[in-house]
Length: 44
Image (cartoon, rainbow, N blue to C red):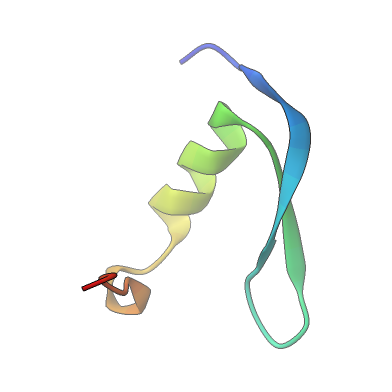
């Protein structure tokens, strides 16, 4: 996967006050791969 950098990084809250900065597609893919399926929420 090519490392495409975002114009502005995205801050995600990952725990009790902890934030993770996502600055590229690689970072996003890595975050989603690590994220436990039990924590996924549907928007419906």
